[in-house]
Amino acid sequence: MTAPERRGTTTVSDRAVRRIAGRAVTEALPGRAARATGSSAAVRGGRAEIAVDVALPYPAPLTPTVRRVQDHVTARTGELTGLDVRPARVGVTALTPDRMTEPDATALEANPGGRVPRRWWAQRRLPLGVLTLLATLTCGALATDLILVHTGHRPAALWRTGALHWLYVHGPGEPPVTAAALGCVLLGVWLIVLAVTPGRRGLLTAHSPAPATHVAVDRGTVAALLRDTAAGTEGVDTVAVRVRRRRATVRAALAFGDRAAARDQITDAARRVLAECGLRRPLRLRVAVRPLPVWTPPPAEAAPTPLGAVAPAGGS
Image (tube, rainbow, N blue to C red; front, top):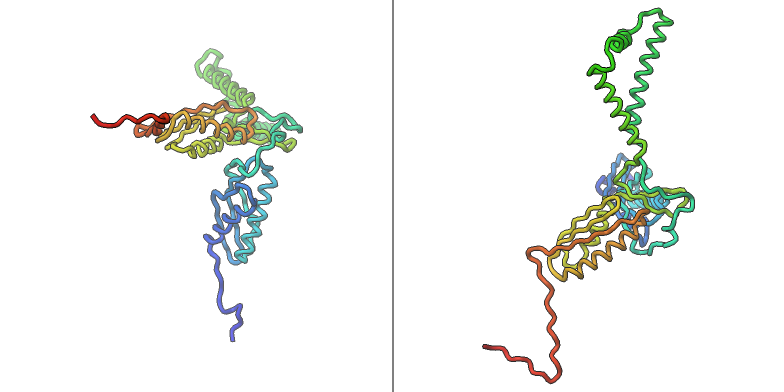
């Protein structure tokens, strides 16, 4: 008789592992607004590799929260599938307001471990890398040629002698020299601008309760939060949101209902969302509500009839 473990095999598909991992994200933070925005999985024999993109609640300490989600997704997926699951790769794609808890006012105060930056400074990796590469190639070629001339008794390279000859025969007033000088000036101005400007215009800095920790929120995330909040207002059909460095503009199209009441409701909800984001520099809010061509106004309330009065009879 064939042993039970040799009668067949069980195969877990990539799709099943992916869906289990996505479901496990919602279980990682009980009572908190955590969800999976994307997931992928690869099963090879008895092992599985998974990656999930998540939207985490805000405010919350990012590093411990991500570690908790990673551990739970890895353990839960391995428990339900029976596979050897490697530590999951977790990517945070969005931060959503946590409706389960009220924002702590003391946590939004100035960071005790350091001043919260007004802007998020870019590292300028691409310009720095290009300049470093050009300087390395130029200095390396010059040093190599000098070493060969002094140690190998070889003549100087043609590119070096040609450059010196060109500089000798061309004066400062000639067009090629003027164009080269103008290019150097423009390059210098560009480098100065990169050095004194922070860059990363798409990020808004926020307060952090943890010392020596800087937090930034993407402007697209703030716009998505405002858009979802305004779209939940009764009578609103479409919403357009634009978030700049210092101002947020919400434009809503109203299909039915009272225009002033809808505007006040959207304004109050948008202000709550901006307060929950905990931005270091609060955004100025502007809300505009316009009725659609098919807008239906609210029904007018009939005036109450005085006691003892007789309503006028209809007819001509």
